[in-house]
Image (cartoon, rainbow, N blue to C red; front, side, top):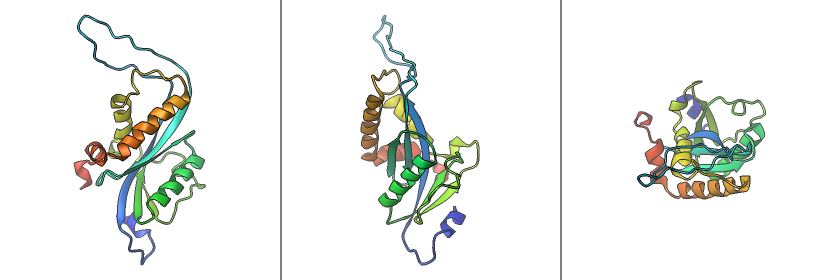
Length: 184
């Protein structure tokens, strides 16, 4: 982290924030999971195998619970550049160290990183080091994606938008999911 912090221009006295970034695929192939039913009844869950997807790019600050997310049609360098540009505008008053894995679009030569963001790569094959990973299981399990059939990709995106907006307004929820003791 110190190396990332040193990459900012000298004389830049903006405060530093640490964010963790990740992305996840959401779509119309639903996952069947546990659910509650009254005694002596069997759960009836719809299932579909429709290969339509959208992606959520998100960054979380475990210390404050702040989070920023965009729903984008693909996961590639172009969409990562869109995410970084919008994130940079939102956090222009800070120097941000953004920890992320080494997905191909995170390490591309075409990646455009604003001068208020320094990238810190996490070690390969270590999703447990990225607190943002916990968002995806939480959204799928607790926010209405498991055992749910969506009629269209627009319905998936509408549900995601509502969930992400709700989470952005609840920083305590994000801190409880992402603020690991080893970060301090």
